[in-house]
Amino acid sequence: MAETILILSDRADRQVRQLHSSLEGLGFDVLALHLADIAFNTSYASGIAIPGMHGALPAGVIVRSISSGSFEAITRRLGVLHAFAQMGVPVWNSAKAIERCVDKSTTTFLLAQAGLPTPQTFAVESLANAKAVAERELAHGPLVLKPLFGSQGKGLRLIRGMEDLPQPDEVDDVYYLQRFVAHSGPPFCDYRVFTCAGEVLGMIARRADSWITNMAKGAKAEAVIGPLRSTLESLALAASTAIGTDFAGIDIIPAADGRLLVLEVNSMPAWTGLQSVVHVKIADCIANALAAQVAPELAERPAA
Image: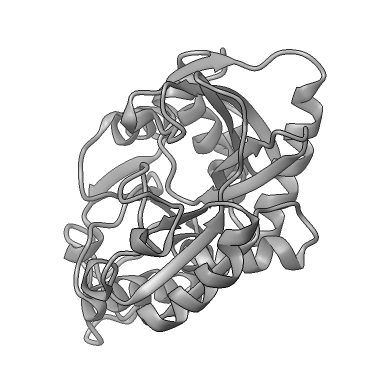
């Protein structure tokens, strides 16, 4: 009987379909579910109830996305991922890595502690504390306010003056403020580097008319060529190691003074833009890397 790999996603997007095909091509059974539909159930020896698996555990788990929910719901879902790991099931990415990436303040803390170049960052609660940061730091240039748990460029604000700080109810009373990295444009450019199992699978330059360069906001993907690739690879691999990801999309931005700064590490990255400019199949690479951990004899076969 073939081993089962579980893909967890709240939507059946292109990446899920590609992973499903790649894993099946390696000989795995594949089950795609919402993490919210997996339950704790102590009547099973595993303690985990997965629809369609009758108390059995998968050989491995790939987390593609986790839908939004209450604090209690998200805590329970991450608890399920922790439970898989406790039972010896490889989870890509682990609950620990996801927690570190989703909370941008933890990400920047770990990047800085690892000695990686990253913009100055200040994460505080309450408007009063945010005003104290802004009053002190705006003299040195603008700040960017980011949702602590945001993605795809949503909710970013440029803070040039005290009046730009939003009210507490708009940001759940948490103010994540990062030094705005001035760089040339338009077009503006930054880089996304995709790592998997300690290797760089590819990278893109993202170019946009706005300083917000996310692909979801209309940025265009271009191949990265030349000696810059080596520096981007080194930064991305070091960032992945610092956060503890199995695969990740690392965002790196060039400053006006020539420095390269690590902005974010994404533990559930999409790769449509990257796939448009690289020759390797990203889903195949992830499938083979996970197979090498859970079933080495299958990883030696090329994915279909």
